[in-house]
Length: 168
Picture (spheres, rainbow, N blue to C red):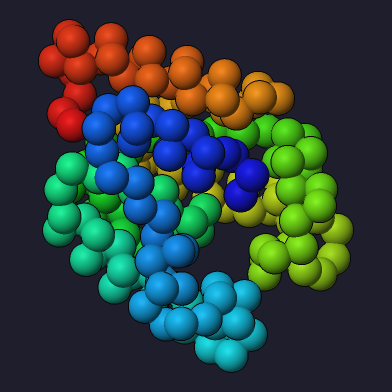
């Protein structure tokens, strides 16, 4: 949450001639409702089932950059799909930067109650080891300007692909 997945993802997709796909938007498109509504009606477990199905379908496609929701790594099935079918970049973002970027965002179901800072810390504590296990590249997305981060990450990926270290 608040790592810049959408902004960075769209810029990188354009740069590399890929189609940008956001897994949460794909879920909303298929269901005709918002992620928040799915959480409200089906709970997190129901949303995670839909997320697994969506990520499996997306991973079967090609020539695309997929931005997953922050909790996608909670599922072993998702982690496996992502590792098998793509080059995974973890946009690691400090909690303080997440709080800045999400300060006006009230659409995140997991941040609707309680202390936002503590919730983000708890999520990071639980998810960070999973991100570390699944990713091919850790990228610190702590800059204030996400566009700068996108350009920096694009340069890193260009260098890796030129050296044959990453597959598109």
